[in-house]
Image 1 (tube, rainbow over the protein chains, first blue to last red):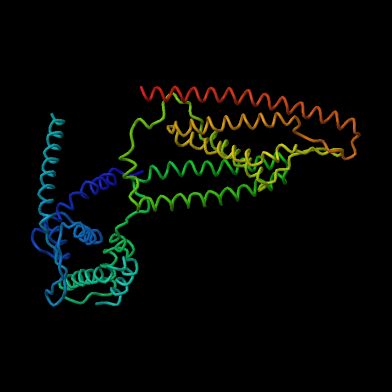
Image 2 (tube, chains in turn green, brown; image 1 turned 90 degrees about the vertical axis):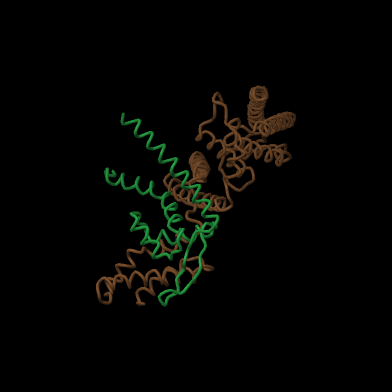
Length: 114
Length: 321
């Protein structure tokens, strides 16, 4: 039987899963390559598994939300990603949705506390 | 770049989609090298083999890393799974029903020792379960890739659901009926031999020529009834199809019964040492019993047909209202 900590961890991962896409899109308003993107997410308090992040970048690019190009930096070829115009529009919509959900949750939980 | 890292990237490449493998491996190589260099800068020395191994282990198992780049992340997804499980349950029950019916028939007719029959049926049961589950899984995996159940869910309406008052047959009852029908067809076609006792030491009982003349009509009738049973079970709301099948098979069944009745003789007693007068008496007794059975079957079928057609008619009217 799962302990309370296990259950919390499972629910926390579920909660974070959807928000990570939002975080990745938000972070890529500035051009970054995979490794520095992961570091910036970690610095912002949203660490993400590398084996999940890089396939996610590819998927978002296939969906037209990101663009990428190979460029040399520090004597090595790196793949740089940034938000596409379509990605910017979707990010704006998702942020609106995120804020609406956040407001709703706050209203519901504040109501329960009274 | 270490030998260990190259081995790791080779293992990842092996499981990647071929068209993108070079590009993805190049990116992963850069990421792993960056991680290694950062770590070396922290420590102020080159990494040991164990430390490189720890970085790769933390990055993830090659199959998992590569698998996440595939567009298809599952064989049967959560949308298809309820349909898959529903069909799988039906197919498994039919397989089990057929195996039990065959085993029971073999025991009743003494086709081998009981323990031998149980042993053979047990093996046959597992084989048929593995094959049927495999086939259903492959079919649904293909349907998953083809976009099922998108259209099905769009076209679905609550009116298609069966009525609550419908007294549906239990799954086991339906499975048994289907199995019995299939066994009859196999026996009728001569594919399966059931040692039905047709005589004793002094005589032999043979079917009358009418059954040879009506071989194909009887085969077709039982086959269509099987389809009707299957539809009644899995698609109870297909009332039009069921009305046609039920009415058609009932009329055809009664017509066949009338032809059989008109033949006047349904079994022939062939003597194997029995006195002639005894043969005549036995033949009369057997044929009289069969005559009664045919008449009773005709009455029961007519009554069942009236009830079924009346119910279908009522349901159709209620749906139209």
